[in-house]
Amino acid sequence: MPKKFSMTLATKKYNNNLMKNKYSTDGKVVHLSTEEDINQKLSKIIGKKFSDYRKSWDEANKFNLITKFPLFLHIELNQTCNYKCPHCIIGNPDEVEKLYNKNENLDFNDYKKIVDEGSKYNCPSLSAQGDNEPFLIKNMEEYIYYAHKKGFIDIMTNTNGSPINITRSKKILDSGLTRMRFSLDAFTDETYKKVRVGAIDLDKVKRNIFNFLDLKEKGGYKLPIVGVSFCKLKQNEHELDEFKNYWKDKVDLVTIQTFAPPTQNKSAYHEFYPEDQFYDDEVVDFKCNQPFQRIHIRNHEMFPCCYSLVMGDKGTENYKNFVIGNIKNMSIYDAWNGEKMKKLRQIQLDGKFKENPTCAMCVKYTFPTKKFIKSEEIRKN
Image 1 (cartoon, one colour):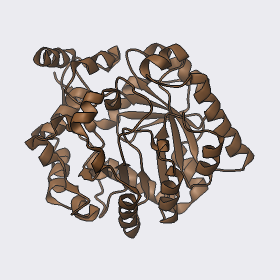
Image 2 (image 1 turned 45 degrees about the vertical axis):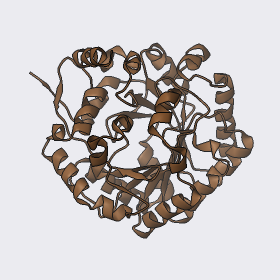
Image 3 (image 1 turned 90 degrees about the vertical axis):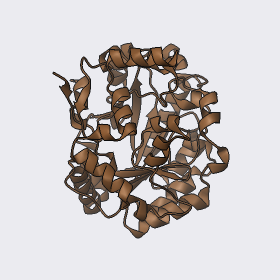
């Protein structure tokens, strides 16, 4: 029998006794918390407007709610990073050069336009980060503060931690950031240097994290919530338990991320799949809740989800059909309420994800069988 699957079942891969709470909102990222659920904690800090927003988020995740405007804006300003992780598109410069154009990157005025529209419709959350290191932007704290000033209440970002010195830490703490997550992917420096190529020493990153936490505590800041993340790969999976054990009482949450290749163009990406990510049978019963939550703005183009795999189709009909608009000539509101999004949501509600080639490919690569990966390797070679 083919395996039945939904996003909420993806957490089965991460049975965990080290931390009390475990939750996922997209099935690809599992959050482990050492105390009360992080969203309950944030509700106590921020108040009713946060708990109301999370109720709407939970209903959207259950496919019970379609809001008039996305609950979350995922804004990828550029594709610039000082690390060259081989499992990320940025670690493959030939792919970056082929698929991205620096002239299409978003500047502060583009960002303000996006935030202003979100503010108009009371959008509660955003992240101004994607396949990049956001704090290479020297005034990134101004981006965060602008969204905070405009009424966004759940502002989040990931960072590799290398630029987060004491001066930057102080600016971030005053910016209005709600959630800060340090992407580490390793417990030892040896593994860290393998999976995060071009990185500074892991001890230096840890020092940056501890300095940030110390400044937060001494300054009496309740926010941001601080976490660390671990993208589980074949090359680092042996360190996962040590990673969780080490960080569980040092940060608010530990996040375990499911690997997905950045494009379908290279068989070399397949070497990063951990053994337990493979499924015996093809996933056929699947629903994705991202088109009910968010819009991803990558440079100027708008997408119905965060998945970068579609970039490998750039220049094709599949790509053109998956892009739901461009902020140069379309509002986010119109893209969210447009026919492309309506059709995509209906496909998910009906469990017919295979009708969309990009959705079908996403499922095959995120929840793969060995048979499928082998066939892709043969096809590419």
